[in-house]
Structures are given as C-alpha cells and as structure tokens.
Length: 360
Ligand SMILES: O=C(O)C(=O)C[C@]1(C(=O)O)C=C[C@@H](O)C=C1
Image (cartoon, rainbow, N blue to C red; front, side, top):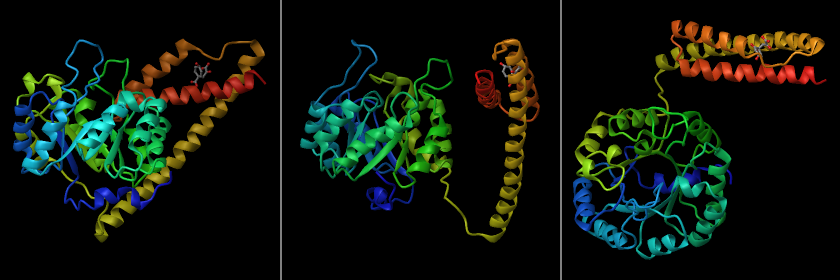
C-alpha cells in the first residue's frame, strides 16, 4: 500500500469545517440510553455516533455488550437523528451483522488488530465494502503490525480506510490508561500522511478530566479527528464509567479546543520561523557531532576493557551518570522522562560500540 491523496477522499468528501468527531457511549446499554445520548449529540459537531455492541472485556463476567440487538437501536439513531453510525467488529459474524444493519463505519479494536489471523478473517468478510473501516492500534507499540492490518483491508478492495490511535498497554504505572507514545503516531503520519488518523483520548487517558488535554495535543499534532466516549450519566455507565464525558461536556470541549491549521502564509511568521529552523539545524548538527565524539571515547573504553577482559556494562557508573544528568536536565527545563529516554538510547549505542570492539 502506498500513500496517496485518495486515501482521504471519504473524509474530504464530508467537507467538515472542523476535525471529524465520533462520539457516543462506550457500550449500548438499553434502547432508551442509546436514543437519549444520540438526541443530545444531534445538533453538535458529531458526525458519527458510536456504541459498542460486542465488548471485549479483559476478564469474563463483566458486561460483554447487548449483542446484535443493539444494531437495531443504531439504525433507529440514524433514522431519528441523521447521525451516521459506527461500532466495533471483531470477527466475521460481527461484520456480517453490522453490514446487514447498514452500520456506516466499522472499527477494529486493539485486541483484534494485534492478530494478523483475525485481521485477515475480517478483511475477507469485508471484501469490497464501501463502508468506512478504521483500525485501532494494536495493544503493543508495533507500527508495522498496525499498518499490516490496514494493508490487509486495502488488499481486499476496501478504500475508505483510516486508523485510530488509542494508546498502548504498559506494565509500568503511568497517569495514562494506555500510554500515547506520540512518536509512533508521528511516524504513522510520516509514512501515510494522507491516511486519516483519529485520536481516541478516552482510552488513552482512562479519566474524563484528562480527555481535553490529550485531545488538544492530538489536534496540535495534526490528527484528523477525535473519537470520544460520551454518556448522559457517565458515573452509572455499564462499562468505562471513569472515562466517559457528558454530551454537554463534549460540546463545551469543542468550543474550547483550539483547531490548528497546517501552515500560515503570513510573511513575518514565515521569516521568523525560517530563522528559528536555521538555529535548530545548527544545533542538531552540533548534537550529532557531540554524540559522534562521545562514541569515539566509548570505543577507547571498549579497547581498554578488552585489554583487561572487563565487562562492558558498569552499572554503578551508569547510574551515577543518569542521576547527574536528570538533575542537570531539570535545570535546563528538560523532563526526567526525556532525559531518561535519551540517555538510555545513548548508553545502548555506547554498549553496541564497545561490544563490537571487545568481540573483534
Ligand atoms: O564508563 C564506562 O565504563 C563505559 O563503558 C561508558 C558507559 C557510557 O557510555 O557512559 C557505557 C557503558 C557502561 O555501562 C557505563 C558507561
């Protein structure tokens, strides 16, 4: 699959004056609940109404969705409100039922996109459809796996495609439910600048208080849209109660969010920007030069260690460097997270250099 302008035709054809908004409850619970939320979202920026019908829960025994019955409720949503509808599909039966009920957009969840077998089955079932199909990132940060899933759909003649960034599972405790790893989303856009990329701040944050900030970051990073879980009574939702926002909160968010454009033509802005970018180019060259020099010293250490048969990894020294650099970084306004990531990468490169020398 190659990048092409055609990949975004389905989205461009909607001629939205703002990013695409997909909203609705995590789960369809009752017909009344589905209809109430839909009516509250009717006159807003929302284009697609979402509701989970089949809910893949981590452990059995929790509410696992109302099943095919909910598809009828979504059809009623479309008839009464004009909102387009969408739901998650995870196998051929789901696909067949969703297509039968004329659901407009289907998404494939993170627990499904992780499996090429499941992605292929779904691609086979969807062959040739003109519905919009969005693929959530797999639970692990693996860009080729994510793109591979989308490619399986593309190869089956599905042209109205896109991706949803919902964050990644992590063993470490963080403030997120699923860490965003924004770098991966940036890489995604570099590879496929025209494939619509939607952000899912609800699953990234797991907490409604954080949904606004993550949404703004996504817009700052040129995402094409947002999928936000919305419930009229979030506290009593049957699933994901902590991360859903009310329809009113959602509408307010779209008043407060700053929509960014890709660029601006104004001359003064462009000349200042060019000046800043020239400075960054010089500094980047210096950074690369310094890192090259540091690795030359690492090579010398590698040769010294080889002569005395000493191990490459020196944990005490390494921890001392890390501690010092975190403090130095703090004084220069660099986050601990960034300093750690950067020095871990530098340390690994230093080890790779020494490994080559010590084993030569
Ligand atoms: O000080 C050393 O012994 C080194 O090999 C250098 C270095 C580094 O790059 O800073 C690399 C590997 C060690 O684990 C510790 C530090």
